[in-house]
Amino acid sequence: MQREDITKLANLARIELTDQELDSYGTELSQIVAYVSTVSEIAADEADTTPMVGARYNVLRPDAVTNEPDQFTEAILREMPQVNGRSMVVKKILKTE
Amino acid sequence: MKTISELVAGFTDGSYTPTEAVTDYLAAIKTKDAEVHAFLATYEAEALAAASAATDAYAAGNTAHKPLLGVPLAIKNNILIKDHIATGASKILEHYTAIYDATIIERLRAAGAIFIGSTNMDEFAMGGSTENSAFGPTHNPHDLTRVPGGSSGGSAAAVAANMVPAAIGTDTGGSVRQPASYCGLVGYKPTYGAVSRYGLMAMGSSLDQAGPLTHSVADAKLLHDVMSGVDAMDGTTITADTYPEVPIKATYTFGVPRSFMTDGVDTDVLGAFEAHIETLKAAGHKVVDIELPLFEQGLAAYYIVMPAEVSSNLARYDGIRYGHSVDGKDLLEVYEKSRAEGFGAEVKRRILLGTHVLSSGYYDAYYGKAEIVRRKMRQELVETFKTVDMILMPTAPTPAFAIGEQADPLSMYRQDIFTVPVNLTGVPAISFPMGTVEREGSRLPVGVQYIAPHAGDERLFDAGVKIYDTSLSPR
Image (cartoon, rainbow over all chains, first blue to last red; front, side):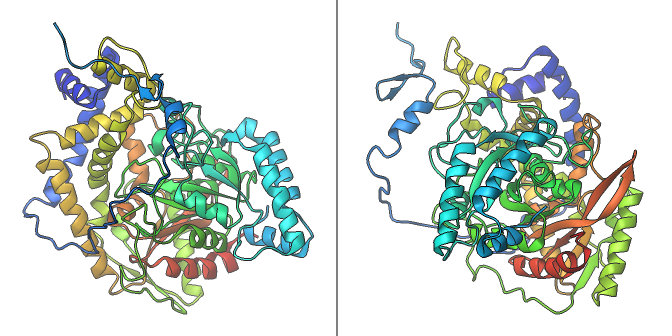
């Protein structure tokens, strides 16, 4: 993988990488991707038709609140990097002229 | 060294008390853990208070429905214990306090267990050596220059050094079984869905299961029986009807995939494995050769499915709602800088790999194909279990390696070759010691792995008790 490929992945993954990381991940990911590509040989002529073994089903529950009001609020607020009263502070995402 | 069963027997007849036990184990941690570094935190005051209450309960005879009353346990630090720091051995959660108990913690607590501390691990359970911890590596008690395995290396080392009688880990691709092999312990990976994942830090959600690390198979069963069962908070937990019943038998037929055990498998490990086959035969079990061509190629599919799930699951660590946060000029920069500082090299590597295999234009070639391979592997297992009761193979291709020895990611990944197919297919497996090999003057334990059909947990415990607890165990 080229440096620009890794840059693109890092942007998608929301991770800032150093120049050194861009180089080392380029080499390592190329090797790993070459290795895992063997799956396309194993499943080369397969349409996705192999029957599923084991159950896969939806699990539903009543759409009802199960917590007490404020049961976790204080604890959750304590973990937030920046709060204003009972609100979490985040960067503005809309630009105003 | 004491098993849980021996501790409980002592507590019951009054020859030993939970307070004495917790005091002794805390003292052992103080003496040994400076060298081993198995623990990230100990809960001394809380453990002693719980021990005192348990001691009183034994004196008063209040032990009903508490099979673990007064038993100290160490818990891998990716499992939430309310009001305790849960780091996942990552800098991004260095100061994160859990706000609720994981279901397994709730169940262990209700059964009377005492949590003595949290254990080191590879960051977010990614690794096979515990070298990927943001808080420094754990050392193997059998040889301090070597790794304890991983990712549940702290849990394994804590039990192996007798700093605790048993510990809980998580297994996504072998993270309980491989450290059990390296540290000379019993390690158990349940059928996928047997144990609730609620309150575990998600790594590969379709692969993760929590399991015990113990000195005996009976202890592993005891802990598993407490932790397992349907949980409304985890929709993937299974019921007794999910899979056909897997009966226990007087003697078993084991299948050995011979062609799987050639490249890169240590000669001494193979020697110990052949000796184990002879032990099984002498005990009246049958051992036959089998072919598992797809199972053998599972590692490639695993390193697609797992990073894909990792990249999705770890998107939640963004510096906004909790965890390490770095200021930036805009929201995007907060994400990018927080994750850059908070994650270690292996976690970043797997997130990038997962992002690649899920990205537009590559999804079908990688993730889609890997899921097909996974399904074919399950089908292959169904056919195999028509003729054999269990599959038999070494747990890991080598004994514990030296700290710093495996520098190349791909060669580290190959250590998982025998364990990952089990997680990909969701079947249960147990590892226990099959012998030792000598390396540079150290006797290093190596483990054997038994794999059963889905819901074959009881069969594995039955075989393990018969073969390990009653004959092979050094006790």
